[in-house]
Image 1 (tube, rainbow, N blue to C red):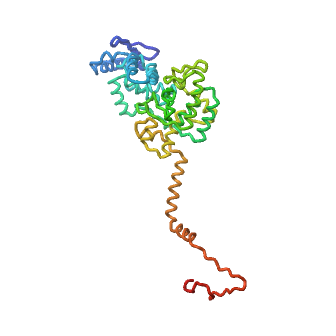
Image 2 (cartoon, rainbow, N blue to C red; image 1 turned 180 degrees about the vertical axis):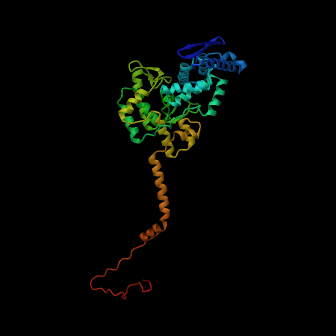
Image 3 (tube, rainbow, N blue to C red; image 1 turned 30 degrees about the horizontal axis):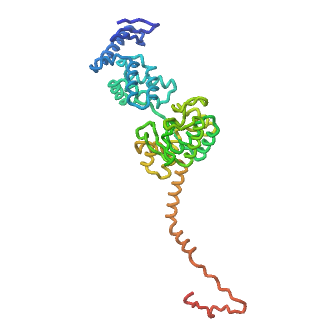
Length: 396
């Protein structure tokens, strides 16, 4: 054991399983520092001995574990982009620490560090999920303790998703027509007409389109339920695709079934064998030009909302959107205010009609009864009621 001072604060330094542990006790008393060092050593020893058959993993750094984890992750998942992003942040902040050295306090410290960097709570929660999976059995124990203390997840603000109005949708389409991007106009038409995710749109190939039978097949998708689903083409989308095909053939000569509809690269060096990496910049420009607020993903919310408002059943919506449960349909469906207003008005009219039914029936009866006019007599004719009028007094 070695204690030393930095300023007025005592630090300890010792070796554990071939690694040097050097930390501040945050104490100005040497006796307190000794106790802190003993407690720290005991924590490490208990953590190391908790799972006997994985001791060699306990003394690995988190960075080393993360490298092996991502290699295995890539073999089991279609996309590793987000995993690399999330694990990258975890390694950047905690990568030098040993697995045995990580506990609930480490998770809280990580959350605080990312919040100071202005990371979104939802993103931090995702990253913590990866952190705990990296820790294996130790991560499971930490997860349970954090759940018990209600500190596992940061509170996430309610979704700001919206459903675009018909006017907003049209503004976006018109604004997209006048941009330099060769992709964004058709991308927005596809998004509005099919509810496809941005990643699904970017990875569309010409072979995914069936113009003869007027439908497309979703290739690469975020979920198993989304991959391989078929979506009919409405007339607007079919025309936009045909127009884009003319441009594509003029540029590349053919539309190879394996080539991507939205090729990557700059305008003078487009590569149809690889998909465009992002639509965010082009979307941001179109949105500002149209004077519309919202995300490209909100077109998906809009599509599902419109299906729900049209009376489509949950199964139909799930088949078109690529969802796996009615709960996800509910999450994405935002019944708009006008639809709510129309429904409330319909209920109100029904109730008022029922309440006023007797008066309405009387009004209808009177309006449907024939009106008798006073007889008109020619000059010189009698007007005596007792004349030859066929109506008797009793009849009147």
